[in-house]
Length: 434
Image 1 (tube, rainbow, N blue to C red):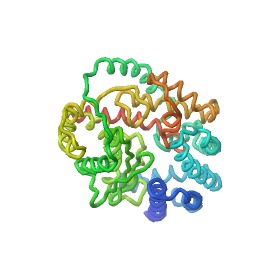
Image 2 (tube, helix red, strand yellow):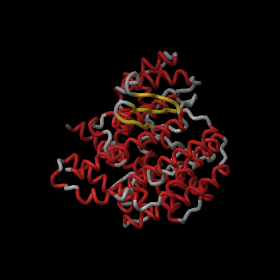
Image 3 (cartoon, one colour):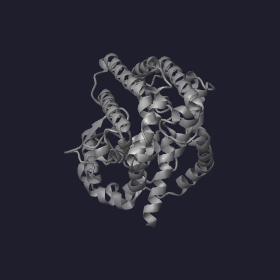
Image 4 (spheres, rainbow, N blue to C red):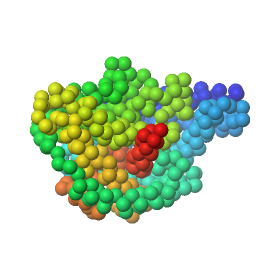
């Protein structure tokens, strides 16, 4: 057990540093003043190079060779497998590349925030091109060691054990079926009473906190709810943080986003406390498709049930000062389940959501393969949206700039969303059956 114990101690420090890095990312997205970007980029680069050095420490080869899987219980054996995977992947990439990529990610993300607000793709394009060059360099390095294509080497971060060829089969089938299904759903759905109005951000935040509490996301002890340009979650155990963004014309989208991020948060909250400092105790170790199934299970499955909205309706009416037919549980339920040719992925209905993901997946594969240039991304996005969802974005702010992922270097993540939606539907079907 001595070799395993040495590994456990070493990876405990690595896991803690990664948690610190995640907290720095949260601060950058929620609280950091804009002029802090240069300092934060340097801090993140130094921290991630340190983590990389620890993952490639020469002593690990000896410890990993001596660790005996046969003498370990299932949790420790799984932990050792993850240690080996992380060491192998880290040795594929140089510290210099890690530092350059991290610095460019921070730079591009902060420029994206301003560019999206000003609907100016030209503003972010030069830095996005630099970032994709580094992403491709990173992908090539990983692919050479892992024995897979560059895109699969990126996707392995988020959907381990699955290839893009397997994803293609599922996504091509969905792309054949869902557009017609979407049209039929739009044509046959019942009428609704419009949710028109100016919904004050303060009241939306009150409604978001109400929903989080009803779902069991404890904002008084272990959870936080803040505002960011793009909703996300982070944390583990006793420190789980989620964010929302608010549109004064549409309070439903923020409630859906809070339900989604709370689903992520529950998964982070309930990982076994005794393993929080080890790779096997990190919620993402099973891949983000599983993680997304937990968030989409709350948002897309439970959040589309009639009883959910019947329960929330009286409380929402009090918060927003409504008493008309708008605020009945049935009307809110019909809005929540309404199909539409929408522009925004995380506001999409259950039918069109995978189509939004398939578009991004196909585009990022072409970007990594070099068959699509960053400068051509807006036109390719518009054409793909028209083909798959049946709507053309009026501008790039709600087009190719709407998501943070590419602008923060998270290339290969998008398949996890649609795979997670499929898994969530399967889990829900099993729950109903049993």
